[in-house]
Image (cartoon, rainbow, N blue to C red; front, top):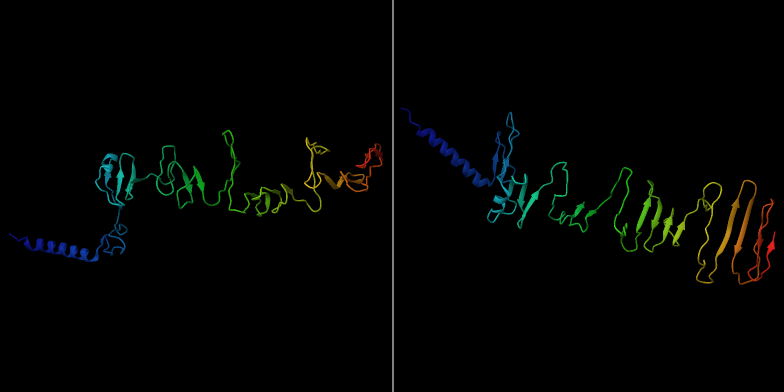
Length: 285
């Protein structure tokens, strides 16, 4: 009968040698080509050199009750919860579920916890917890016909900027401001520097009021129009243009000095009149 002592001794010696090498290297590699494990890994599993069907690493499977019952779980302890069908890890304080899948479908039952997702609030591009139901850091691009709609009693669109900066801007693709509200509440249309409550940039030297068909109207005001100094309204260089004649009208109300205002009318039928502020007499042209 052949003795089996020598082969057994050789196997034991090889195992002891492997254990001794592992104790010195402080990390273990499992592979088919004898490659050294990655220096930063305690356990490096590499299946790239295995011929045929590859295999993965099976994480311990537990129910939710079993996971919660684990005594003094270590930070970063990882398990697969068969109750929720998701991976869970211990962050040092509580269990955190990794329920975000690849290309997931989110629904109202999803609960996110941690530095970015909390209490039903959602943050995109965040490095800290969001402070509203949806907070986005960075640009937002909407590539279809859509709108913002509110159903509350007083829906509002609020834009907050740094102190002294513009509150809201609407720009074209060339970064030109088409509508702007600055920090002082002044509104500018096609201008970046509004100087009044409403500033509208002209096209060339012309400012135009458009209307339907062949007419445009300024509606009357229910109260006086004026300024701080004299409660006056000044209209200057108003042009009425037709294909036949170019007629201009200059009017200044509540003049405090003697003077006159020029008035011209078309040569067709009809009449126009003017009255000096200090006179009750109308003069017809």
